[in-house]
Amino acid sequence: MSSIPGSGSAGAFGPGGGLDFSSGDASGGAPNAVAKSCVIAGTRVIFELEWSPIQDRSAPEAEFQRARKLGYTFATMLPDKSLVGLARGLQPGPGRPHAAVVMLIERFSSGGAEAILLSAGNRVAFIGLMDRRPVPGFDRLVNGLEAALALLKEFRDIHIDQDVRVATDLRDVIPNGEMLQVQTIFDMPESGSLVRPLVNRTLRRTVVAGGLTALLVGSSLGYFLWEQHQTRKAAEEAARLAAENDPNRLYEKAIAHMLAQAGVPGNAVLDRWRTLLNRLPLSREGWALQRFQCSQNTRDCQATWSRNFGNFHDFLTEPPTDSRFPRVTPTPNNDLLGAAITTHHPWDEPELDGHAAASSSAAASAPPAARLATLSRRALPLADTATQQWGSRLQDVALVAGNAQATSLKPSRLFGPSTVTDLQALKQPVVQLEWQVTDGLWSLPSIDLPPSAVPESLTVQLNASQITYTLTGRVYAKGKLY
Image 1 (cartoon, rainbow, N blue to C red):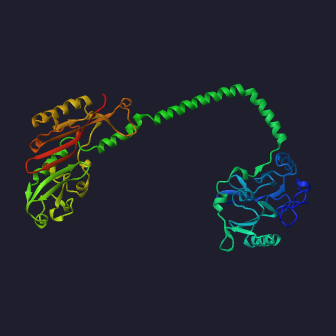
Image 2: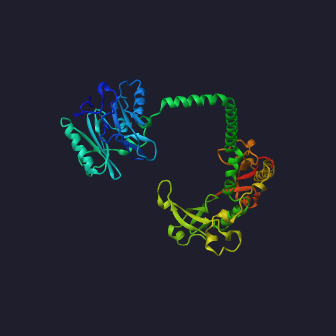
Image 3: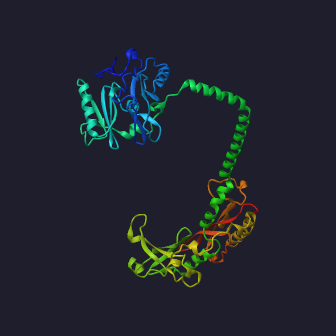
């Protein structure tokens, strides 16, 4: 009889390194015992395999077949193919079975005498290794901690001349043990630790031969059916990809929301801005109106006041009508005495339309887009029509202003999600044209926006010599006839 090197006790290995199964279970169990199973870190782990050496590591298949003839039905090997672990049966459990010894050798063992204790529900596993090989009798899954501690004492007694490395996930009861990272060792096992069924190769050869005959008989029909299936599968996949990447599908998914968020078209918002501007005095309490700014991105207009001779108290005690949140804005040199004052004037109130205020708090708190019209794609003009009609109005404004640079209208470009860029591929595209008007304040009341034009910002600048305004926006149109 030979033994595991350094084990200090007789093993279950036959003379010359071959398999010797006459002595029963080398793991300490009864002959014909079923290898035990439990789930650790989501993996079905197998214990109490019968470990024996392989005579020819380059061709272990012959010994596997001998083991099958002796009644063994499952087998696995150490990573170096020096030992084979056998079982006559496995306790049932979920998932594919993996040998605990192999996984510990692959992911934990570093050599020498090593004892591993693992909690497994109401059971405890004990694995004893010597120089990265299992020690006979110490691949066990026992009922209770006392039995496991007894195996630990026995293992230490056998290796009394060794410094036994103890690792466990039961640090509370084995305080001197090294902390074992169970998840790291047993999660996502590799195929090398699988405990595989031993196959009857003679029977398999017979079955394979019969299968080959049947395959040859039906190969022509099978290939034809397979080719048809592959063609149909490729066509279905191509159709699916074409549908997913169809620019019209991507465009239609986003365009309605984007049009609703583009802003309120026509004169509705511009009229409110002009009403607010008309209500503001040019000066009060020694402070002069310097700048007036409105934007559809905000819910109010901002007025900036510069000091001529008044003080903060005079202005802030009774700020202008309809203003909110007056605050002092420091100058660039951080001199508060020369600071400006900014007042905020809400433009989204229904009263600015000349109608009665909404009585409910819900109506009063609703955003502008909920109370004012939004763009309708069906109602948009064609791009050429929008260019001719709105462009003509802008040309008239520039002519009256006596300055050809007073207005501008940029070429149309596709409006929609950034993932779609080919206008010609779309069935119902929308385009946008940026425009701008800069002139003296006298012409602001005469600006009449078409229903497809959205005013985006109004900036009025007041100085001692003149008052000018800049009005910007976009006009939206159909990119093609639909």
